[in-house]
Structures are given as C-alpha cells and as structure tokens.
Image (cartoon, rainbow, N blue to C red; front, side, top):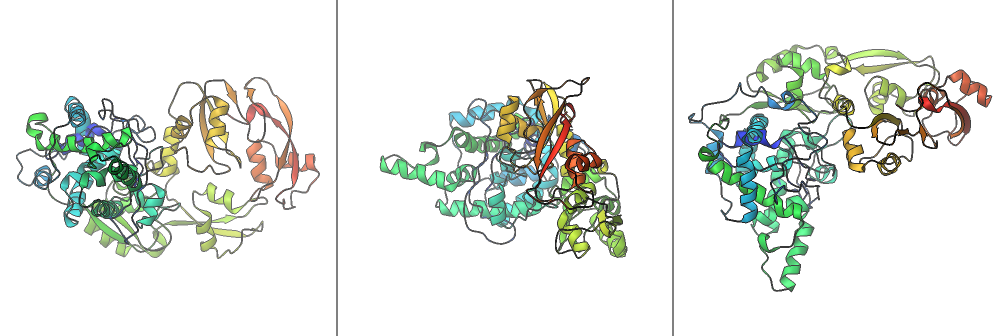
Length: 567
C-alpha cells in the first residue's frame, strides 16, 4: 500500500524506544505498497503498491538513504517530541514495550539475513534511541489499532522499517507518512489528498488504513504473515507471481524460498530482527527509552477551517509540536471544506475544546480584502497569499477564472508570517532548498513541458538527487511557475524558455531575443516577473496595450538578460 523509502539516521531513534519491548529494525527498508486492507475510513479493494526500498547494508543492515526527509535535512527536535523528558524507568509496570512483546506471534527463525540486520541494530543503539523517541507519540495508538484487528504486535515496529517513524517521510517512490502509502493506494483506502491535507501522513487515519491493508494481505496469502509483509513491500502481484513460478518448478512457496527483489528479501528480515531486538532488549539495550502504556493524544473534531497557529495557541502547545502530531496538514490551516480533526496531547484536549467553543466564528482564520490589479490571475493571487484557487473562488462565489481589475476579493490568510509555520509543506521544502551542497546553486522556474529528466540531464546530475534537493520524488509532476533549486557541477544555467545553456557572468549583461507562446493562465504581470522585464517593455516590444487580455497561443517577443534568468 505504500512505496518504501530508505531512511538513514531516523532508525536509531525509534529503535531506542522500541527496545524496551520489541526489536527494532535497521533503517527503513525498501517500501513497496501492497493492497491495503487495514485501515481508516472505508473498505477498499485489495491492491498492493510498489514502493522504493532501501538496500540493506549487509543484506539489510543499511539504515537510511531517505534523501527527502532524513535526519540530515531536518533538526532532531522536529521529530523528537522533547526527547529525554518522557523517558520512564524500565521498571515501570505499565510499559508499552512489554505489551508489544506480549503480543508477538510471528514465527521465530534463525537465518543469516535476520542476524545481519540484528547485528546492525545492536551496533547502533543511538539510532534505535532516536527512532524510539520519534515513535513515542504514535506507538500506543498503533498497538491498540493492531490489537483491535487481531494483527501481531510485531507489526507495530513496521514503521521503523518503512519510515523510521518520521511523520514527514517522503520517498523517491512518492510514498508518504510513517506507513509509506503511495498516492493511489492511499486514495483506495480512503486517505484524502489535496492542497491542504494529505491523509497518508495522518497518523490516525493512515494507521487504520495500514491495519486494513495488512489484514487483507494475510487473508489473501492464507494467514502467512511473512508473505503478507513481502506483499506490503513489493505488491501482492509480485509475490503471487513468485509463488506461481516456484510451483511450476516444484519448489517450496514460503517467503524464504521465493525469488524476490533484494529490497523485499531484506524487508521481512528487518522486521524479524527488530522483533528479536525488542524481545531481548534487556541484553541488547538495557537503557532503551521506556514508553508508558497510556494514550498520548486525543482526536478533536474541528467544524470549520482553523489557522494552525491559533489552534496551537488554544491548545497551549508550540506550533511545531502541533504539526508533529498532525503532519497531514500541508499548509497554515486545516482544510476549508468539511470536518477536520486535530490530534492533541491528552492533557490539553479538553481545555482546547472549551476555548474553541467560545471562539467567535470570524476568529478561526484571518480574512483580508485584495483589490485586483491589471494582469493579476487567480493563480498569481493564490500564490501570493499561500492559499489555493478553489478556496478563493468559493469564498468569492466565482465560477470562471476571469478577474476584473478594480474589483476586490475576500481571501483567507495566515495570522503569522510564513516562516512561523516551519513544518508546513512550503517551509519544509524551503529548508531543503537552502541546504548548502556541492556545486553551483541555480534557481530554475518551471515551464510547461519541463521534466526532472530533462533538467537533470542538462545539468549533469541524477534525477533522484534533483528531486530530493527540492523535497520531491522523481515522478512528482512539475507545475509551471514552481521554483526548483539545482546544484549544478557544470557551472551552467538554463533559462525558463528554450534558451541554450550558458555560463553565468555576474558582471556582464547578455541580452537575447526569444519568442514566447502565451499559455493558459498567463498575464503580462506573470510573464514580466518570470523573465525579469517590465510590463511596459513587454507592451512596447509587442505593440500591445497593457489593458488587453492575452490569448493562449499568442506569440510574444522578449529581449531578456540571460544572466538574470536563473540563480
């Protein structure tokens, strides 16, 4: 149901937590998606998704190459939930690790691949500690959900393999969240995905979906949990084909006998090694962080769109912590349509409900009036105010897409500056893009027809690296106007529209004449910003009025300084 990402440094943290009761696996293994049947909202058809996986160091021992959301990119406190302040003595009776151990039911097996992975965990106690701390807010709910579905509690450790319990984990195969659902499988299992919200990162909803998916898989494979896990990683179709191949050749059809990808062959041993690690935690990691066997959060219903900064204020918690518990929210507020939910610390939930009930309807979010200027479009206005086009249209009862200069729009806006919402999608992406790397940093504005492959080939970099520098996956669609960071080793940059490669000469102006074909949604203002020229220049070069609408397909002539088009 998800695509497996690889996780570098995330694994140790969770492992530390899990050690008290279960063995943690090394860094996230390959994540493939299989038909989800354990989960959240509505039951969906079984179908496994394939996800990228992390090749193990020795067979499975490699912990992380999750390039998009690894510890190398985000500060530990983003995921640590006050690590250290919640550590309980291992002697505490209500220990969640012990509850997990009590529910172990997968077969014990001695195997070289399991031992290799176990050795890795034992050699990296710091990683296990980090993963355990990262798991702290979520693990009680996960264990309870699995028990309600009669699923072995070893599966509670699976997010270590999948994402190292990183709430914002995103793989190069487009798998997202701690359970690593790919978009299609997430939608089949009722996980909504839109501009404001991605249910694959909703810990509550995605855990329900993962439980349904895994339950479906074990039924499909006649109760064989190892085959079900392999299917979760690589897809049920892949596992079924391997079984049929062995049957034709008269060979056994158990997991250990099947010819599967290296990622999947490492995936199951990683989980079994985690089981052994947690099972024998006293010997492997006696000071592993304990986790209390009590709920960490409550789910609170929100009837209207709410600014997350206001929600954090009402809950009396930091905004970062609110995002950590609610990583599904991409932006600065909950979704504008329908009912939303927030996960809040248990000791904060009731006070939040009372304060929210007293909050005036016009105080949930801030509204502002925007006077439309000549050349502005819904797209440019939505980008300016960090909202989406549909929300502006609904708030102003707009049916089409044409705007009239001089009219005003009512627009919902964030109460804080964008940088305050540090864990929103835009700010996480900005953090990644600002990390210093090798090469010359170039900025490219995406044009229609651009692809990661073309840009990577032009700048002699790998597609996967280019995507990861921008917090994306290679198969993510590129949107016109989107900004990409490219760390080029060629010293060359590329213009936005059919310009040949050129060297950047900061001290010298290089003007070139180019032809530009107007695309849907273009305006004089947008084109002038894109090519760093003035509207007056555009009008003069093309003998047009600034009050005239541009038509898709119309040809324009521009004289641009190519040294200013990127960088």
